[in-house]
View 1 (cartoon, rainbow, N blue to C red):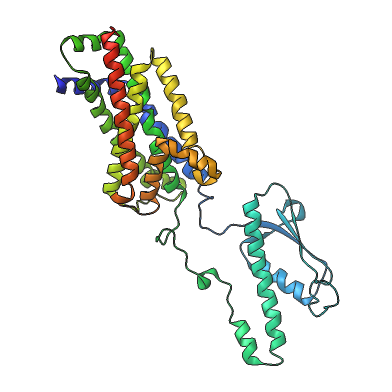
View 2 (cartoon, rainbow, N blue to C red; view 1 turned 60 degrees about the horizontal axis):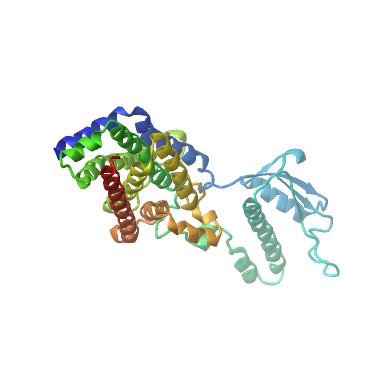
Length: 382
């Protein structure tokens, strides 16, 4: 009997084409869109700026700085009206020997809408050239007195590769946009199990299928587990499909492929625990709702709220500290943190053990409550 009940669930799920699209197609599309949309944010390629140069000084020093900027591919020289930044060198800028007045400073004018973080990057890039120019001048002045001191100044390098080595969580590569977006939409997509589960459950209730099973002495526990098993399998297929999209499909859109830096065993454990959590919430909503419309509405709103709080809609590192603390109440946040530990930090089973236990316990409690609700409804004749 139990085997037949599980088979029945699989058949009902496979017949619901709209639910399958919500579980598999929607997250895959979101992964593609978000990976492509965010690739420049997480890209390690050199950023570029459109600049216009105005030289009122017209000295050898100002010419040296301008020539150096022109050689840097970071800066694209354009007309004044098309520039993001206008760099103006005032008269007297190159007169470093005049100590009677305050030194003349370059004026930077920002045009249009430029994000504050890009302005800071621009300032750092420009400062690199100004410091390089000043070191060159100091070297030239010192050479009149000491070749050894001048050579010491000339050996100073401003290259980041020579000044420091960057590692991200002990990895040589900094994470890309795909490694950020795939975990997000695995978590969000898995909670949409509510759509097929609620539809099937409420249809069975209307058709008195549950009442007939109850009259045949089929326990509420058996009814629940027979529904849980197929959805656990579907959740695992869903997770691996999303990983496959990130690894093999996303690169066709000129976006970095997903790299799994962590343990596969940790990935399996976390996805299993997350599926239990998603199934528990979905089952509780399905047995409590009066209609499939009510269930899908409540489930959809709840998913959006849990996603908004848990860092799905807006990454947690963009949130203020109070919102980051609030995010800890969302099971989506636990799942997302675990997946990020695996994909970004190379985590193993012990790295995601806390999140996995929390998700499993949360899902189990939700399933127990849903069984109590179902038992009560069966006693009351549904």
